[in-house]
Amino acid sequence: MNRFWETKTLAEMSRAEWESLCDGCGRCCLHKLEDEDTGDIYITSVACKLLDLKTCRCTNYTERTRLVPDCLELYSVGFEQYQWLPKTCAYRLLNDGKKLPTWHPLISKRENSVKKAGITVNRYAISETTVKDVNDLEDYVLELQS
Ligand code: SF4
Ligand code: SF4
Image 1 (cartoon, protein in one colour):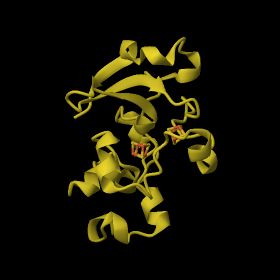
Image 2 (cartoon, helix red, strand yellow; image 1 turned 180 degrees about the vertical axis):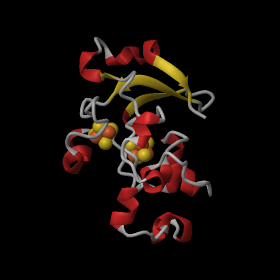
Image 3 (cartoon, rainbow, N blue to C red; image 1 turned 120 degrees about the horizontal axis):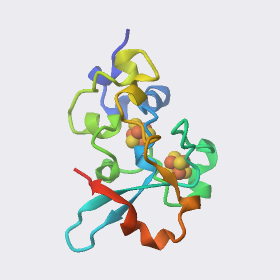
């Protein structure tokens, strides 16, 4: 099999190759909070309104940036924006010169290996549509992003 992610940079990949790197974890669709003083980023359990909490996939991928202006279009944003991605994300890993983990579908050849490894957010994410006040995201902080 062509292990393109080991021979090409992100910028050299075809769009199809690039898209296949997304493992469907849904972690980038959780709201984050940034400490203005320290720059620290905190991950919350509150997911974007368009995230399907069962499949951990966007329910309107093609229209997402129109419907959710804060949604990062990773393909076109600069790599410096990848600090907002979880440390398990293939884009961040490869951009940092790291390898894909064994549970990644391109390595495991199994789509459900991401869920089995506990990487998907389905166990703990709640939709922003069920949160009383989205200005109270501090109440939903899970951890400091590393
Ligand atoms: S964090 Fe990365 S791998 Fe996970 S859904 Fe987002 S873009 Fe895909
Ligand atoms: S619009 Fe879709 S891809 Fe963007 S954050 Fe929301 S669920 Fe995720």
